[in-house]
Length: 216
Image (cartoon, rainbow, N blue to C red; front, side, top):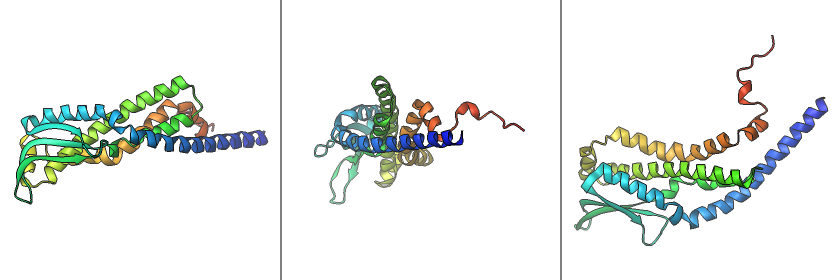
Protein backbone atom coordinates (compact mmCIF):
# COMPACT_ATOMS: atom_id res chain seq x y z
CA UNK A 1 0.00 0.00 0.00
CA UNK A 2 2.73 2.42 1.01
CA UNK A 3 4.77 1.41 -2.04
CA UNK A 4 1.81 2.17 -4.32
CA UNK A 5 1.43 5.62 -2.78
CA UNK A 6 5.14 6.35 -3.30
CA UNK A 7 4.97 5.12 -6.90
CA UNK A 8 1.94 7.28 -7.61
CA UNK A 9 3.66 10.29 -6.07
CA UNK A 10 6.77 9.66 -8.17
CA UNK A 11 4.68 9.42 -11.36
CA UNK A 12 2.94 12.70 -10.52
CA UNK A 13 6.27 14.39 -9.83
CA UNK A 14 7.58 13.16 -13.16
CA UNK A 15 4.50 14.43 -14.89
CA UNK A 16 4.88 17.82 -13.21
CA UNK A 17 8.52 18.00 -14.28
CA UNK A 18 7.52 17.06 -17.83
CA UNK A 19 4.90 19.81 -17.82
CA UNK A 20 7.45 22.38 -16.66
CA UNK A 21 9.96 21.33 -19.33
CA UNK A 22 7.38 21.33 -22.13
CA UNK A 23 5.88 24.61 -20.94
CA UNK A 24 9.33 26.25 -20.90
CA UNK A 25 10.07 25.11 -24.44
CA UNK A 26 6.69 26.22 -25.77
CA UNK A 27 7.04 29.48 -23.86
CA UNK A 28 10.19 30.42 -25.77
CA UNK A 29 8.36 29.84 -29.03
CA UNK A 30 5.39 31.77 -27.66
CA UNK A 31 7.54 34.79 -26.82
CA UNK A 32 8.83 34.91 -30.38
CA UNK A 33 5.30 34.79 -31.81
CA UNK A 34 4.09 37.31 -29.25
CA UNK A 35 6.80 39.83 -30.12
CA UNK A 36 6.85 39.51 -33.90
CA UNK A 37 3.03 39.46 -34.18
CA UNK A 38 2.50 42.22 -31.60
CA UNK A 39 1.25 44.69 -34.20
CA UNK A 40 -1.61 42.30 -34.99
CA UNK A 41 -2.67 40.94 -31.59
CA UNK A 42 -2.21 44.41 -30.06
CA UNK A 43 -4.45 46.19 -32.57
CA UNK A 44 -7.71 45.56 -30.64
CA UNK A 45 -6.10 46.98 -27.48
CA UNK A 46 -4.99 50.07 -29.38
CA UNK A 47 -8.45 50.71 -30.81
CA UNK A 48 -10.23 50.06 -27.50
CA UNK A 49 -7.82 52.25 -25.52
CA UNK A 50 -8.26 54.99 -28.11
CA UNK A 51 -12.04 54.85 -27.72
CA UNK A 52 -11.81 54.95 -23.90
CA UNK A 53 -9.35 57.86 -23.81
CA UNK A 54 -11.44 59.74 -26.37
CA UNK A 55 -14.46 59.32 -24.09
CA UNK A 56 -12.54 60.39 -20.96
CA UNK A 57 -10.61 63.33 -22.41
CA UNK A 58 -12.92 64.54 -25.17
CA UNK A 59 -11.41 67.07 -27.55
CA UNK A 60 -8.08 67.09 -25.66
CA UNK A 61 -7.35 63.64 -27.04
CA UNK A 62 -6.57 62.86 -30.69
CA UNK A 63 -5.68 59.23 -31.43
CA UNK A 64 -3.39 56.26 -30.79
CA UNK A 65 -1.31 55.01 -33.70
CA UNK A 66 1.51 52.56 -34.20
CA UNK A 67 4.93 54.09 -33.59
CA UNK A 68 6.32 54.47 -37.15
CA UNK A 69 9.79 53.09 -36.40
CA UNK A 70 8.83 50.35 -33.93
CA UNK A 71 5.43 48.88 -34.71
CA UNK A 72 5.05 47.10 -31.37
CA UNK A 73 4.84 50.51 -29.61
CA UNK A 74 1.82 52.82 -29.40
CA UNK A 75 2.10 56.55 -30.05
CA UNK A 76 -0.50 58.46 -28.04
CA UNK A 77 -1.37 61.78 -29.68
CA UNK A 78 -3.30 64.57 -27.97
CA UNK A 79 -4.59 68.00 -28.92
CA UNK A 80 -2.97 69.57 -25.86
CA UNK A 81 -0.51 72.35 -26.83
CA UNK A 82 2.81 71.76 -25.08
CA UNK A 83 5.94 73.91 -25.03
CA UNK A 84 9.05 71.80 -25.37
CA UNK A 85 12.54 72.58 -24.08
CA UNK A 86 13.65 74.03 -27.40
CA UNK A 87 10.87 76.61 -27.18
CA UNK A 88 8.58 75.12 -29.83
CA UNK A 89 4.92 74.56 -29.06
CA UNK A 90 3.15 71.58 -30.60
CA UNK A 91 0.43 69.09 -29.79
CA UNK A 92 1.68 66.74 -27.08
CA UNK A 93 2.39 63.13 -27.96
CA UNK A 94 4.24 60.29 -26.26
CA UNK A 95 5.05 56.60 -26.66
CA UNK A 96 3.58 53.71 -24.65
CA UNK A 97 4.82 50.11 -24.67
CA UNK A 98 1.72 47.85 -24.65
CA UNK A 99 3.80 44.66 -24.36
CA UNK A 100 4.42 45.48 -20.69
CA UNK A 101 0.80 44.50 -20.04
CA UNK A 102 0.47 41.43 -22.28
CA UNK A 103 3.53 39.31 -21.44
CA UNK A 104 1.11 36.85 -19.81
CA UNK A 105 0.04 35.70 -23.28
CA UNK A 106 3.23 33.72 -24.10
CA UNK A 107 3.33 32.45 -20.50
CA UNK A 108 -0.18 31.07 -20.87
CA UNK A 109 0.69 29.73 -24.33
CA UNK A 110 3.55 27.70 -22.85
CA UNK A 111 1.42 26.26 -20.04
CA UNK A 112 -1.46 25.40 -22.36
CA UNK A 113 0.69 23.79 -25.03
CA UNK A 114 2.58 21.80 -22.39
CA UNK A 115 -0.66 20.45 -20.89
CA UNK A 116 -2.03 17.06 -21.85
CA UNK A 117 -5.43 18.20 -23.14
CA UNK A 118 -7.13 18.08 -26.53
CA UNK A 119 -6.32 20.62 -29.23
CA UNK A 120 -9.88 21.95 -29.07
CA UNK A 121 -9.52 22.57 -25.35
CA UNK A 122 -6.13 24.22 -25.89
CA UNK A 123 -7.66 26.54 -28.46
CA UNK A 124 -10.56 27.36 -26.13
CA UNK A 125 -8.26 28.14 -23.20
CA UNK A 126 -6.04 30.33 -25.38
CA UNK A 127 -9.07 32.19 -26.70
CA UNK A 128 -10.31 32.85 -23.15
CA UNK A 129 -6.79 33.81 -22.13
CA UNK A 130 -6.37 36.21 -25.04
CA UNK A 131 -9.63 37.99 -24.24
CA UNK A 132 -8.66 38.22 -20.56
CA UNK A 133 -5.14 39.49 -21.23
CA UNK A 134 -6.49 41.86 -23.88
CA UNK A 135 -8.63 43.44 -21.16
CA UNK A 136 -5.55 43.76 -18.96
CA UNK A 137 -3.63 45.35 -21.84
CA UNK A 138 -6.39 47.87 -22.52
CA UNK A 139 -6.51 48.73 -18.81
CA UNK A 140 -2.74 49.20 -18.70
CA UNK A 141 -2.51 51.39 -21.80
CA UNK A 142 -5.34 53.66 -20.63
CA UNK A 143 -3.99 54.17 -17.13
CA UNK A 144 -0.34 54.60 -18.10
CA UNK A 145 -1.44 57.24 -20.63
CA UNK A 146 -3.40 59.08 -17.95
CA UNK A 147 -0.48 58.69 -15.53
CA UNK A 148 1.97 60.22 -18.02
CA UNK A 149 -0.35 63.12 -18.79
CA UNK A 150 -0.98 63.78 -15.10
CA UNK A 151 2.55 63.45 -13.73
CA UNK A 152 5.16 63.52 -16.52
CA UNK A 153 4.56 66.79 -18.36
CA UNK A 154 4.05 69.42 -15.68
CA UNK A 155 1.17 71.33 -14.17
CA UNK A 156 -0.50 72.22 -17.45
CA UNK A 157 -1.39 68.67 -18.46
CA UNK A 158 -2.02 67.72 -14.82
CA UNK A 159 -4.66 70.44 -14.57
CA UNK A 160 -6.29 69.27 -17.80
CA UNK A 161 -6.58 65.69 -16.51
CA UNK A 162 -8.05 66.90 -13.23
CA UNK A 163 -10.43 69.11 -15.18
CA UNK A 164 -11.90 65.96 -16.73
CA UNK A 165 -12.70 64.63 -13.25
CA UNK A 166 -9.91 62.04 -13.05
CA UNK A 167 -8.28 62.17 -9.61
CA UNK A 168 -4.64 61.46 -8.81
CA UNK A 169 -5.61 58.62 -6.47
CA UNK A 170 -7.68 56.91 -9.18
CA UNK A 171 -4.76 57.19 -11.61
CA UNK A 172 -2.31 55.83 -9.04
CA UNK A 173 -4.52 52.83 -8.24
CA UNK A 174 -5.36 52.08 -11.87
CA UNK A 175 -1.72 52.38 -12.92
CA UNK A 176 -0.41 50.11 -10.17
CA UNK A 177 -3.08 47.48 -10.81
CA UNK A 178 -2.38 47.57 -14.53
CA UNK A 179 1.39 47.46 -14.20
CA UNK A 180 2.19 45.36 -11.13
CA UNK A 181 -0.74 43.05 -10.42
CA UNK A 182 -3.08 42.23 -13.29
CA UNK A 183 -0.48 41.30 -15.96
CA UNK A 184 1.13 38.74 -13.65
CA UNK A 185 -2.06 37.24 -12.20
CA UNK A 186 -4.24 37.04 -15.33
CA UNK A 187 -2.49 34.09 -17.09
CA UNK A 188 -2.15 32.16 -13.82
CA UNK A 189 -5.84 32.50 -12.98
CA UNK A 190 -6.92 31.50 -16.49
CA UNK A 191 -4.71 28.40 -16.51
CA UNK A 192 -5.62 27.26 -12.98
CA UNK A 193 -9.37 27.73 -13.47
CA UNK A 194 -9.31 25.94 -16.84
CA UNK A 195 -7.12 23.05 -15.61
CA UNK A 196 -8.61 22.32 -12.20
CA UNK A 197 -8.27 18.49 -12.37
CA UNK A 198 -4.59 18.76 -13.27
CA UNK A 199 -3.91 21.26 -10.49
CA UNK A 200 -5.74 19.05 -7.97
CA UNK A 201 -3.61 16.11 -9.08
CA UNK A 202 -0.42 18.06 -8.44
CA UNK A 203 -1.43 19.43 -5.03
CA UNK A 204 -2.92 16.12 -3.88
CA UNK A 205 -6.40 17.29 -2.94
CA UNK A 206 -9.50 18.75 -4.54
CA UNK A 207 -11.68 21.74 -3.80
CA UNK A 208 -14.48 19.42 -2.63
CA UNK A 209 -12.22 18.23 0.18
CA UNK A 210 -11.90 21.65 1.77
CA UNK A 211 -15.17 21.23 3.59
CA UNK A 212 -14.42 17.71 4.80
CA UNK A 213 -13.58 17.46 8.47
CA UNK A 214 -11.04 14.94 9.70
CA UNK A 215 -12.41 12.02 11.65
CA UNK A 216 -12.11 12.50 15.38
